[in-house]
Amino acid sequence: MGIMDANFIQRFVRMAHDGWVQGWHEKNGGNLSYRMTDEDVALIHNYLHTDGAWIEIGTTVPDLAGEFFLVTGSGKFFRNVMAEPDDNICIIQVDDSGSKYQVQWGLVNGGRPTSELPSHLMNHEVKKKVSDGRVRVIYHAHPANVIAMTFVLPLEDEVFTRELWEMASECSVVFPGGVGVIPWMVPGGRDIAVATMERMKRYDVAIWAHHGMFCAGENFDAAFGLMHTVEKAAEIYVKVRSMVPEKRQTITPDNLRAISDQFNVTLPERFLYEK
Ligand code: 13P
Ligand code: ZN
Image 1 (tube, rainbow, N blue to C red):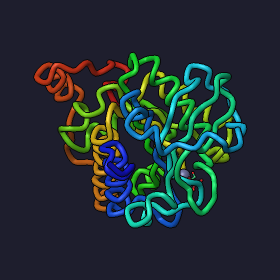
Image 2: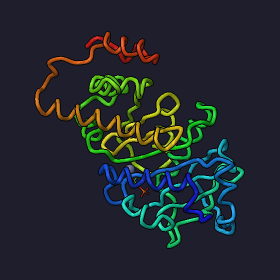
Image 3: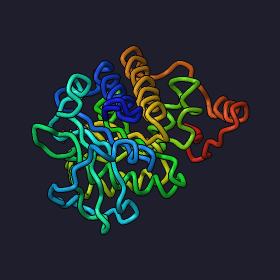
């Protein structure tokens, strides 16, 4: 078996390509990470090199000590991941203190993991805890319609959640917990990572104003499907607002309560306010 035959790598590569096809990854925009299982590590162990430098993450993630991640490279294009995976993605291990990482496979022509590694790893750390280890995928993309919404709506979790839920019947079922919104911040550092991690304690979606979105999922399909659903709702919102200043009719709070009964999801009442 070659390392590229490993199912988790194939799924990672396919998802990167799917994101490119959706138009969410201009140039090097966006990044993807997957927290590997013990079985994944055992499967590809012979391909790992442990003689590289240990490099500062830029934050600390003690609850991820020793864990392995498959991650996109910084400055690398999602467009190229499928054609040349070992040039564009890498496997890293976090050290015992949770403050450094080592590249153990990939990035064969040099480079380093995504500049958003602090956000990815802090999100993984908090999601691992609140999901009892089930969440393994963190996905960052630059979908245009969600970004457009951050120029016209108040940057409040309640407002974004409610508008997105109203845009299609499936939305409140796909993200019943709602979405978190973060005001514009400098990308790539610890501060935006901490702000995102705080939202990820209660949400699976964090919207970065004028930048993009982070989604968390138990597997690749869940994370991709979440990004796709939120962005589709945002596209409908942009179309509606482009046609009329105010909606003529919509999915009401009572409609949303009826959906929650039918689909057995709990929708927090703070999103069901009267307008
Ligand atoms: P990287 O190329 O370092 O992953 O950065 C892309 C990006 O989207 C930053 O927010
Ligand atoms: Zn970005």
